[in-house]
Length: 329
Ligand SMILES: NC(=O)c1ccc[n+]([C@@H]2O[C@H](COP(=O)([O-])OP(=O)(O)OC[C@H]3O[C@@H](n4cnc5c(N)ncnc54)[C@H](O)[C@@H]3O)[C@@H](O)[C@H]2O)c1
Ligand SMILES: O=C(O)C[C@H](O)C(=O)O
Image 1 (cartoon, rainbow, N blue to C red):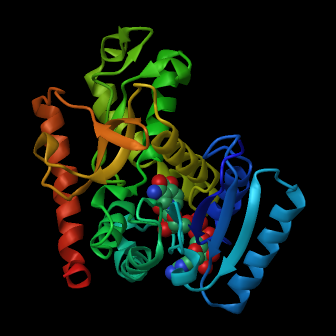
Image 2 (image 1 turned 90 degrees about the horizontal axis):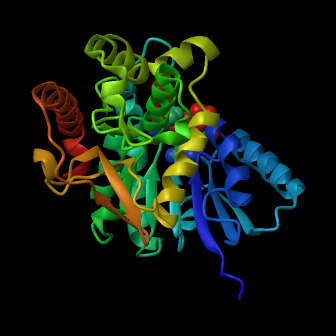
Image 3 (image 1 turned 180 degrees about the horizontal axis):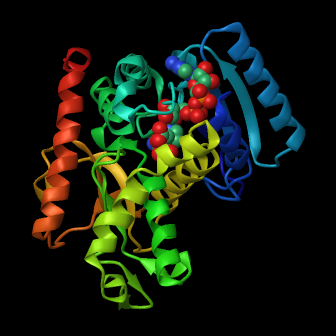
């Protein structure tokens, strides 16, 4: 029997990421090739943005996607999020050259208060929320705090782009395919303080740490390359990453909904206190997923270098959180 459609709300639908994301959702890349979807697209109530959104929708129509069971345009989150099963919160200002993501906090935080409240009021009680708009962890925290009637675990932030970037760097260093790399993770904030950690990673059962065996490369090349990749792309393109960000959003939600079959991935999730990260902190953790639920990988040894890195990224998140206290009460 055909599955009933899932409602997917996407904000910032006429933006750069939206343009790479919507077609793939409608094509079944995110929820499965047998899962019909209804797209509920939100843009700001501005004539130009709404007109651009109409143009994107015309193109989506012109793809005649068999899985697309409906599509609506919105300028109000209260209608865009109605009964949403999945909500991708992309719409926010991107940074330009010379900015850090936390510089966007002031400009973007308000958006996530309003949208968290709207999700709380009208979305499915099981809605899976992914925040992409920067600074992603703190925006996800704001949305979660603004939606007290929804389970906190339904709110997540995107660390998957960092995870995928780390996979590619390790593949290049070892000369092995990305598909062979397992048990990689990225701890903390989607910012240059994030800690991409390959100490547990394996390729065909062999330790990646032993294969690379170069702490200086880890510290001076790998971590800065992954941590500053967003800025490098802005510098090169003049615009922030878009297709790779959309791809990471697809990967994040697909794995959350369809499961990882025991494999690790990275999600920004509200901490349950694991690894000493205070409960509720929106933090990148290694997870596995099954039946629509994620579970933090437990029992990993945190050595001195790793603990230092984790403390730095945690401190930054706590400072960001303190900066938005007035919004979340
Ligand atoms: N977490 C990550 O890994 C990651 C990666 C790339 C980009 N980003 C972030 O994603 C966000 C979007 O990037 P982009 O390149 O698509 O930007 P963009 O400027 O091209 O598009 C953003 C769109 O969001 C819309 N928008 C703004 N406020 C909105 C609101 N309140 N409701 C609905 N729509 C709204 C804008 O009108 C615009 O069309 C930025 O904050 C960027 O920094 C995050
Ligand atoms: O770096 C940015 O500002 C955009 C995005 O977060 C990225 O990592 O590419």
